Image 1: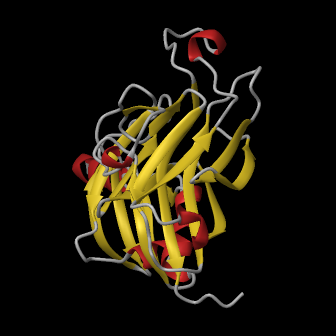
Image 2: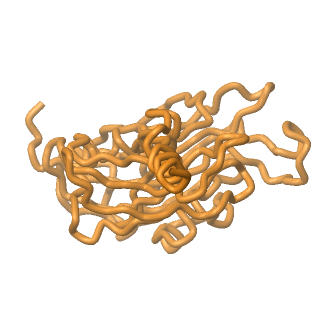
Amino acid sequence: MFGLLKRLRSASASTDGVPGRLSGIFDIRDGMLVGYVEKIHGMSHTGTTIEVWRQHVRIASVPVSADTGHGKMPFKLAIEGRFTVAELVVETVRLNARNARGDTGPITLDGATQLELIRDHLGIPVEPIIDLDFTRDGNARPYLGAGWSGAENNFTWTEGDDSLVHFPTPRTAGPYLLRLRTAAFLSVMITAQKLDIYVNEELIAATMIDGQLAEFREFRFDGSLFGTEATTTLRLHHPFAGRPSEHHGTGDARRLAFSFRRLSIVRPLNTED
């Protein structure tokens, strides 16, 4: 009798969790899903896994790692042809977290990334010109001129008032799109960051960004601005840069304005307005 009760308790422990209690965010990087589950204080996260579901079929799973010290338990999962990025964007493939107790909850795609990927996979056809990844293992560094700090795990900070990007000049006439995914350095005194964007010193956009979470922005400009030189320079002007040491009491004396995740320039193949 005692053995039966013990088995019943064990069975119920894996099914009496709270739906929606767990939560987290993921991003897509170099063929990998990279994200985290939020750690809930006082809750056991033993056996927490990330499950990938297509409709009602689980097609992949991976355990989360230990808390990094910031209340987040990270995970990585290779896509490896088991599903597509487009399926993730339209949510026919979803991520879910589950622990040993049975608590569950959705792991959602980063909002700025989702907007960006909608353009990439569901928008008008485009020809990529440059596509820069500003993470530590990304490809951006050879294209960067003055005004950039060292790459960190998930982004690279602009430094000073101007940050330069150099790339081979495209030769096809017509419209182009500049796409950015970036977050602003903000404080009590700096409530928004101004960003002026120049192609070969011709202003193509002026915007304000007031969110510390990464945002996706897209700007249209004409290819005539590229000129005839072999190399084109993109200048990002951010005059409200501030020092964390002066605004947040840290030892970081760099003058920061934006943390860049991705920057791309594409040429629309369908130019009809």
